[in-house]
Length: 323
Image (cartoon, rainbow, N blue to C red):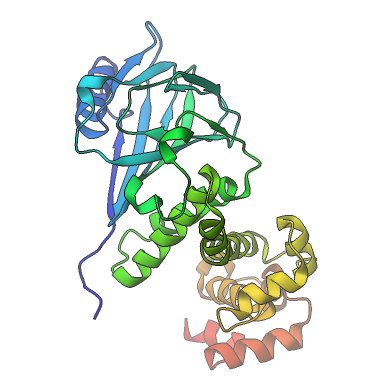
């Protein structure tokens, strides 16, 4: 039985609500040294504002951080814990960061990444920044990858598919801060480890496993997110979605079939939920039902009415009246 206790730890830090004179000390001392164990050196005489969102699940943690001004973030030897056996995957969301570790220095483009060993000193510098870091135990990656230590400080291009899929899949956990099903979380963590391993450099066996497991799940999540953002588009189709993601229509169909559903069923569900929400909202009380159906992506009103009744057990008119 799944535990009722949330397995996702979620916390935010920000300086925007602090007096300006307190922002730098708070960020450097409390967040930097105590939370992420780094030394933060903001640029002198520059207005400073920063915020971070941290979340963790068993076997994985991640954070998104943004800076409005320049700074250097250092991990000196004295702040490294001897028990820290983790590796971080740093992804630059803006393309402004320079990172150095193990004698290598890389300038990251937007969406580019670099593997970071937590047991070695490192330096990150930027004029302003927005980045994401995913931290996982090195021992959990060993079965999938080549020698991770040799990949520290190496640039991972933004075009690397596993790297492109990683932020969206990590956000899948972040969007569910009260998720409590530990089996589901464990599966999601395994998928994230697959993506990290492929981005860093997986062994042949590790790549075969990750492609069939983590990449498949991340691709499906990316497609669902794309549909959720575009379901109202009249030209949305399996062909257009497949082309957007660089996949074949047949492969997209197979991804949904693996979940026991179909592409068209998923799209119809998103459109019906949108229509239902609009019918229940006072904001759309004066809108004709036909306008709501078309706004939700339905091109045929009779098809909308049949689908709506089958899904909700009432017609659009009856549901609006019940509201």
